[in-house]
Length: 307
Image (tube, rainbow, N blue to C red):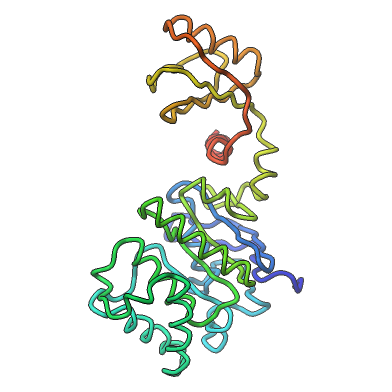
């Protein structure tokens, strides 16, 4: 195993009855990666992450975590912190009681738990809420508590399954600031996310669909491989259906004050847009080519897999 690799996944597969959840997946995480796993619901992301954590045994293939097989209790606290998709802590326990319970499960003594809890609660902004019951925390604060509990063992690898799903944008931003700080301090992070703006923040992104990882690379690399072009249209109009079923365009999206239109050819696409704007009697449009977003890249990756 390459010493720079924290995780090596080799040809792992997992089925539940007749459903293939993960199909011969290879995956590598190098030290201090932020690896973002993205893809549609049911793609197999959660099953893959649980196998990385040793919570599910693969039907085939193997997982190596720090050159060990995951799931060994004597190494778990040293190597791995896991935050599941759903808030799974105890609502009738306080913030500190949850942390103490979690730390004790890994054999940490009270003094160590208290010391580390103080450090992590300061980092996550929960220092003033030690005595609050978990059920009385906001959605964003619950996610921070779950993160705190997963960090109390000071793991080398942090695995997060859609940690900001359903959380407001402000709390998502705060959460990612914490992840960046942890990563800067040396932690390797594997995170799944439904949000493409979060995928942009990862150093490596893997696209998963129907049990397979079909594309891997940095956000810049994946966008540079996008075979289509994107035009931005700024215009004084608020019609979400403006460019519906328009020739020479492949897809479009509407973002309040502008449209993003995916085209095969820039000039042909521009002419088609100008004709539609003229038909709609919409003057003063500003049309320019812009780089593709991760959302556009993955929409077309998903469509490619379906074909």
